[in-house]
Amino acid sequence: MLTRRFLGLSLMAAAAMAGRRAGAQEALTASDQYQAEGRYLPLYLELKAQVEAGDENARFYLPWFAAFVGDEATAVGFDERTRSPDRPMPDLADAEAEDALEAIVRTAADRQIVILNEAHNVSGHRGFAARVMRALRPLGFDTFAAETFGRIDSYRTGAPFHQGLGYYIADPVYAETVREAAALGYVFADYEQRPDQQPPAEADMDARTTAREVAQARNLIENVLKPRPDARIFVLCGYSHAMEIEGLGGLWFAGQLKAATGIDPLTIEQSGHWPATRPEADTAEVAAVLERFAPTRPIAVSRAGRAFADRIFDGKVDLSVFHPRLPKVAGRPGWLAADPARKAVEVSVPAFEGPALVQALHRGEGAMIPADHLLLEPGQARATLLLRPGVYFLRLETTRGIEPAFGMVTV
Image (cartoon, rainbow, N blue to C red):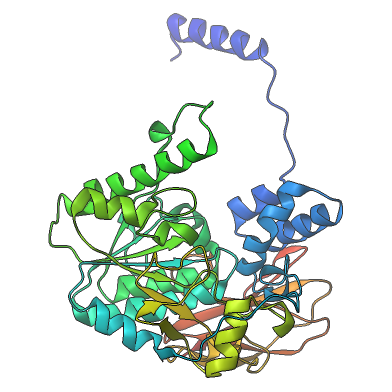
């Protein structure tokens, strides 16, 4: 039976709702579709269109996002410039090269922290990071920290894998690195600067850079080293954060961490040493290394007992890794096919129209970030996926949306 009080409250609530206008329904943007549905194509195509229209902000983000969808021609080649024939080549007559993984394992044996950098537009750097992470585990390394991580401490093998765990892990290569690390027993740690650690809005670039580097070092200490002083940590960061000696931009994360803890990290540069999409666009350092050693696998290069690198990193890191130029394998990147943990799986592709991605996703994990995917050519009927052991379902993402799963593979 309705009471008089209930009726009164109901009338008051109805009157209040009538006095408010409902928020207007809004269409999803390309960014919304990416965040809410895990759809890559709308944002990728929009960024390309914005770049063509002269949008400078889009020019900044497109190479990163192109790496997420495996478009290496755009990701790596976006701002490539032909090397000047007048630029002198470094003299590497007395240089030495060693298998990069062997060099890292050898020099990491007595180190507590290993810091490897990447260029955010090069998925191959993340593929190499997976191999480094794998090689460090038998040495007792137990913690994986990365500047991109967010809310990562709750992730466990088989749990839903989503973009909230970190921006760059939307790259399937990065995602697989994290999944494999969890399966190997690593625990995860984030250390990125928090909003409350930001400098005043009027601070100049040098002050903002220093504030971030100091915050990152402090956060890694608070999040990992204070609760677990004996933790052995593998860190994946971007660009200059790996420099342990003051250089262009000041004292970066690795140097700040060393100064604050007294721990000497093993610092590894690879960010500037990826081959260009065209040999004539290689940096002078890359061109010289490839000509001198003709590597078929990543190598650590030194000269006169010091890591050989470009002017930004010269003398400021312990190891300097250069990557070979490898041909594609079944239409896929040679560096990815060279990973011994991955197997090639050829799949049939359903008919589609327009741009499309064929994707393999871990069964039971959630339908967000693929284990592998590739952009298809018009009319392509078969494709090769490179997958670690596991069970995967297959689907297409087209401009219409994510299509129903069409198959399953076991590796």
